[in-house]
Image (cartoon, rainbow, N blue to C red; front, side, top):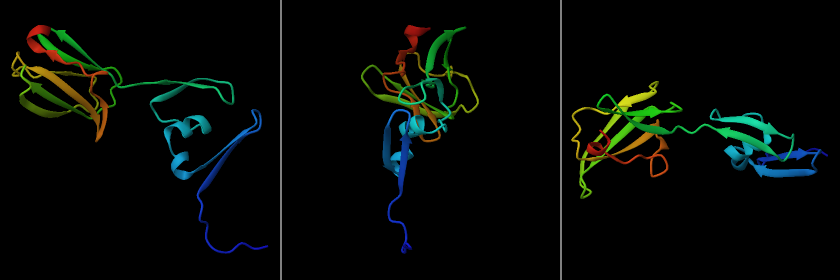
Length: 152
């Protein structure tokens, strides 16, 4: 019997005979990080396989681009532990929440960044670490809010 027409489904099936399971998914589901980690050897660059039993159990190390804040020689230094970012946004706020400055810097290929000396020491500095338009580090899980006159 000949098939005619064009395909209407974009279906992928992963079958593991050793463990007796199969997963049926479309291209959108298959092209997610979770599916790529579990069903292929094509892992995103920031995931390193640590262990696999060949089936259900896979353990990966995720290298997250964290930013550490340090005081060195009278300056504030932001250190990127997994330096994959291309931009750093700095936001300065007064204690009453008024935004007093907002500036972006190119940090591609850099593993640290020294805050500019002309920043008023009484402001609270927040940063956003990005790769192109993807935010890598910000918020309270890696965002260090530091009042400069308390750190120096």
